[in-house]
Image (tube, rainbow, N blue to C red; front, side, top):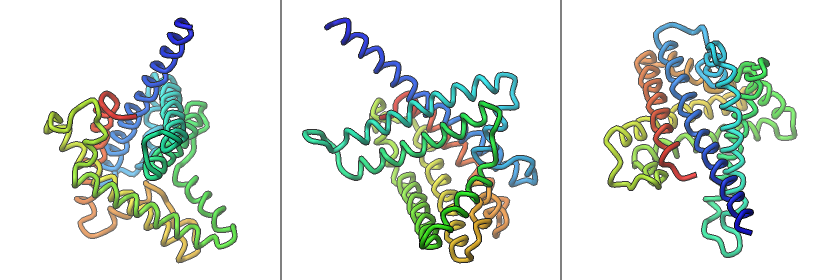
Length: 266
């Protein structure tokens, strides 16, 4: 029995390390997206400022394929961890709430989707996230009450964006660093988390707004995902400055993810 327990414990530890690596890879993607957005702010639009652009940048490197396969495993492990967490939160005799479960489900979907996207790039068959978003929106519009569904999705993404802004402003993200007591978080960690969450929230709110516009105009091409959000921000008043600030914020969020990989609650 002791050997079985030891094997189970070893498997759990390996799974946890792989899941934490998911936060590490997420941090890398956010840094790369931030760099691409910063380049876009000053006129370089050769690559999409979103997940596909970041993954394409990785794929171009000497050990890009190996990094992408590592990223796939890490995202898969983190997504599976969150799915298992969702299944256990709030059950009989277990602590937690429906809100905790909903967050775990949302994270599971997000990281498993990133695993699928990364898998495609690792195999050499990656495609534009912008195109995938438009195709998904077009398919959703074909469903009964499709425009309503697309609008509802957009509003949900806007709400998530606002949640990120509030979480960053109030520094609620420090509660996710269970291995690092709130009072002991360094100034750099607090700044990276605050700026990062606010910037990511702004980007998500714009992404959601584009879904709403697509629903209003019944035009799936208006739903352009994160890259479209970056272009929309650039085209607005003081666009170059605002986009550059969001880009720096996304890089800061990536730095926070590196800290979370070590000290964060899974």
